[in-house]
Image 1 (cartoon, rainbow, N blue to C red):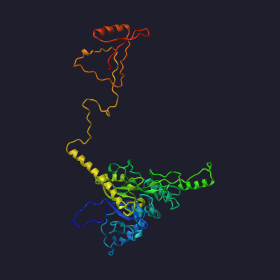
Image 2: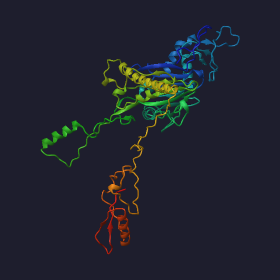
Image 3: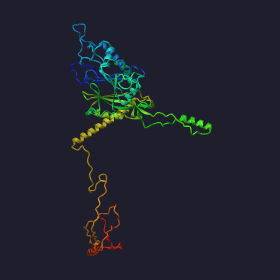
Image 4: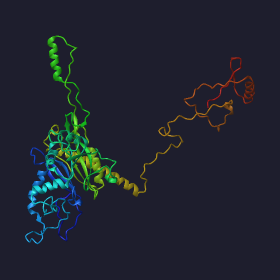
Length: 503
């Protein structure tokens, strides 16, 4: 950010890095005085006052405030040399190119926020109109309340005979409200390029909440260029409650029961009691109460395309602790990463009331106590990122792997249930009879068979043999001291059942 456009002339002075941004505050209030409502001008200092190099962030007050600045500082401006006219003052060095206007530059501003700007006219109003028409490219609107858009709407009357239309950039809900309620041919002529009777002085640019990831790359992913040298990414935030059906706010989980009105219920009950009966054939309709919504505002990250530095500018915003739809934490999360990387250089945020204002009367704004809590959330996120980065550095310096360790398998060779939940494989039953050892034939070194699977039937498995196979099996059983049992005859065949241990 920039407080003064002049560089130090002292040869021995310590030279500091040039600021990336210059931000001019035209107004910072919310009423009731119309000459001090929200309006900012932002530019990248690397552009040096070129055409379309200024971005207006909100414009509750706009051209009138610019005129007031020129009225204060124009008398100190120096005249440019005009031939051999000795009465003309020697101009100071201006680092800006020739102004893009039909008239040649005559003055160079020395003091004030427009220092080093070359101007084509001698009056404050003419030069302010030159800035409005030629230097300001885009109007970035946080939300459509009058204290943020009134100045711009009225100032559009000065856009006749300009070379290009102005651009209004905002989240879709704000664009829809401006289109429907301001440039609609009723409140104000439709000077936009959309809708019936469009004049074409203004074009709409609908931004994507959280940034358009299809645009940009690296640290600039999600940003869209809004003027020469500046790009923007926006986040929606909450600005109190909205009961208007037409405003596209964010729905809350708390809603009023549709179709219920205690007043009308009591009135119908009294009428029914007086008649002594209830007429069920007559339909009773109750007015539907509007559903509560969180009114949408916005917070914008502005990125200087020359240095990669950023600044965060909030519109009106309420604390997450009282919001129907708390969303500011998303902005802080994005800001924390940028602060940790050294990219975010400043934050502009409102604080409309002092701490005597109760929570129920905030009307979507902040107090110092809530601002401290919100900034505490940001600080906690920054500390968490710093701790994580420090942990990663420690792991790298000690030689320990930074990747997560794998879990060890149990020493008995069995897999953990989470790793292998498939059922155990079964061995198919043998086609040959299985010999059964007697107790005396089992030596101490003989391995004990594993216990039977709980999924198997504990009864003996049955095998059917022909008479020839039966006689052969008898011989083998007698030879090996086996055990066999006769089974009853059936189906004309002799059947023998052999008991064997389960596999």
